[in-house]
Image 1: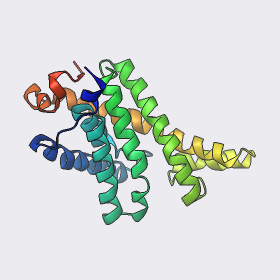
Image 2: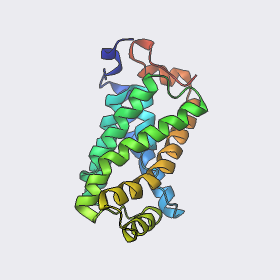
Image 3: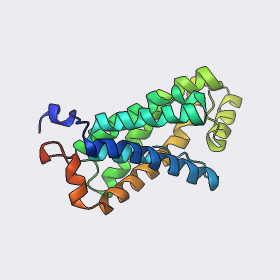
Image 4: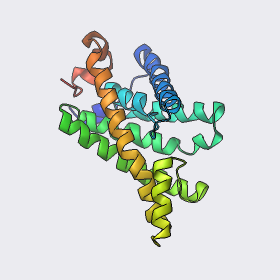
Length: 201
């Protein structure tokens, strides 16, 4: 399949249903993590699922919409983190197209790659807005230790973000993988560009 097919996205009925559904999954994941006081965010599950179903453009749209809604309803700072969510959606869509969601080891590698991309985008934002911290108890604890040992702020902030992003994105990818596997093929075929998109089978 050509690259053009990978980047195509039709705003049809299936897509219009997918976007709010993905945002809803993100919200539920975030609420679940908050209620259980997990040291994770779990707010990118729907974005990754949408990217795997309909490609990187769909993932980017869902990621952006997700943060825009958060920005209006929960925290205005969420607007700026839309860049990270868009990056997650694009990378997840590309990885799915490349067949990186066809086995457990590949799913783990995909989670690591997505975590690294999220960290690269989020770290400069954390430094500019929060003095390098993430607001996560695990990450900020590591940040404090790193700063006490005299490490540069950019490195301490990167490790702060990464130590949370790694388990968070691997968990999100696995959950999205599980949801996808449980969906009927009559549904997933609606999102396949030219009926050739790489799937999880």
